[in-house]
Length: 432
Image (cartoon, rainbow, N blue to C red; front, side, top):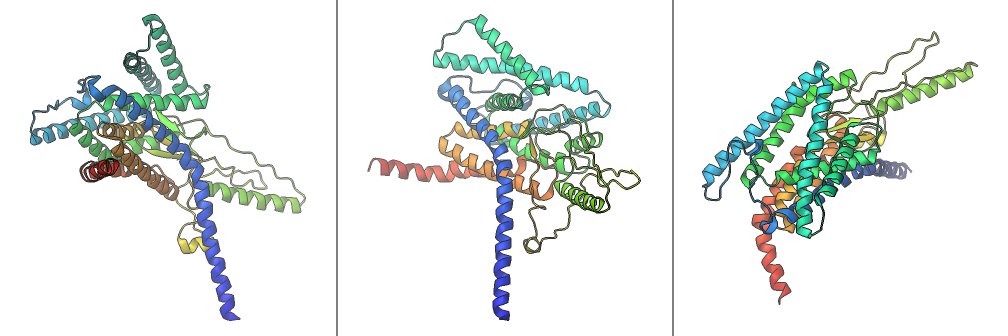
């Protein structure tokens, strides 16, 4: 009887572990899909645009002078040492420029000069949509031989750019429209960055991985300081950030919500037993958003007031600083419970992540589509791992390092090892 009882208990424990895993996966699926779908759409549109514009010599093969090619312009006649040195200098200058701009943004935000930031970002968004978007659209019309006149083209393009700017920088426009324009902006920038020479592109992606780690995780990092200041003030930071769901404000951890809700039910039950009616008033949080070119940030619904004492004193809800100890017996054995491992209501991904994911697959599309598929799967695997870490640690994390590292590694493995082996075999089988 004792052995049978032990077996039944072990089976119950196994079922408990399976239930925890199943509930965790079901709770994470919707949030992951909400951020994976727009990233996939952005990369797919970038690949289509790059292959339509840059293949078969349809446009210039070299990039115009920009901050990414300020120190060195790659030439096919240059030797490997010159290309490596020049690409490294370009990447270094680019990262230094981003760091300086981020610190300037932090100082302007710290001293309440947010109107300057909003104005600059709105003007940049308009010029990008109007000029670069118009250039790409004109080239596509010419390639497709679609007839159009200049007056109608400029009129429609101007209205499109105005609507996009208003949608991205106001709160009263449809949320779906804002998401669509953010993806469109990322596609335009990624297509422009794909014109950067290959050596500079790879060194630039590697430098951005290092910068992202330092800026988000190190104490005193520019992005970390910017987000902490925004959370302290509970104010919005002007930046292009994709949000998976419409939420309001920096919010507390869901585990504290459950604790507050449990305490509310206990106190309410006690008040009911004592013949008293206890009324709880929810707190409101201001609308805000995080500003980060390459990071994921979490938002949760603000918890209600912790407790209303009999004398009317109300305690203020504290922000999440640590994780609650797991009370579930099955969760203790696996180390994490559903409460410990939960994604936020809304995942925020900086538009820089969209751009450089798309730059990687766009660069791969200049070679062949097999490399594109492999790079896409590698980037999605890295993004999934980052979201998993976000669910565990419940704090802002850099989104570039894992995805870009996997994407670059699989790009070179596919191009120089897989493709030379698989393509001849496929051709021989096709004509056998």
